[in-house]
View 1 (spheres, rainbow over the protein chains, first blue to last red):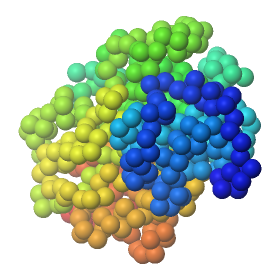
View 2: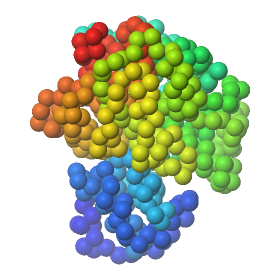
View 3: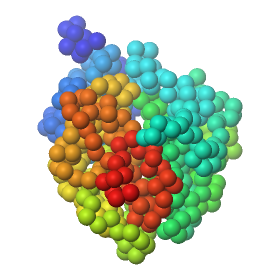
View 4: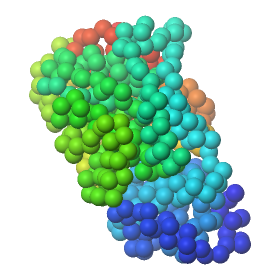
Length: 168
Length: 288
């Protein structure tokens, strides 16, 4: 849902705000003074209308539930310009990551591809299976044909520990 | 010099040209690469789901690196480089996170150590091997060719955790291209992101970001585009045709990994560098 739709009925939720803030490390959204340096350099501003300074303002105002439920937190390209350039160490990037984590925890609908990647890691340790690729001349190649050494997928022990790390 | 290497996910499962060219080029520069045994994902995509689980994955790979008893770890993927560096910074300074991760590692008999120095291709070549050594090793200088370089985002930012080059004015990759006898062009889109991370949620926007950068570069009239990250390479080379549809024009720009370019200057055969796997490469433009 869009943020504007969600904001029409919005109520600040101090508990969720506390949850987001307590999970941060070396990041200080409370110091943000809305200079908009983040937004002016944001990779996703033009195409996806992501405005990182607004995300910070909403977190600081307690509207965490609304942003967590909004698609806008999935528009970040992780280019890290906002984290680099923020003069106040408010790092919108880290806030967006924390909001994404909270969305997963609250079982909000998230882009499927992320869950697929996690499922693949649980299965083989990597985010995708070993692929056969096609050359410019339309010939197929795999690792062996290219003379690359064999690689091993993860064992059951790894899978069990990773599952535990995910809190499952 | 012996260096451990962490390949990540994208390189050993699909971006074979990067792996092939890395394996070819480094021995020529007297660097022996030692593969990690049992490596897994760095946690990059997992970070969006669960940050501490992602850091466990990174720490696990760093622990595997310390098992090799080598101090240096080469991480040729920008995303993996960021994730491993971020995790190292966090567990060095955050006791609580360190305890949590060490407990998980112990279950597999692994121990985390702070000693591992994390390198990327760019700084290992520029700062350790050195421009002069590369110049001296070049057998066939790539004279008359002009490139733009794309260092990518996550190896130059955020500078507070220590990155491989300047966050706002990176020059090392330019210097490396110039070391093989070619020219580079400074351009205003240099820091623009490839968009790969958006493939998870907004594929059209991702391709559009890649397409508009390629279009701008093509209009500068250079001979090629040089990158050093499997994700950037997927956007600019593997998916160049799809990216072209977003800018309403034909894109025809040769995109190469730096290690492939260096390999050509070292007179390594094209096939051994995986150049036949680059979808956008035009051998005739390079006199091949």
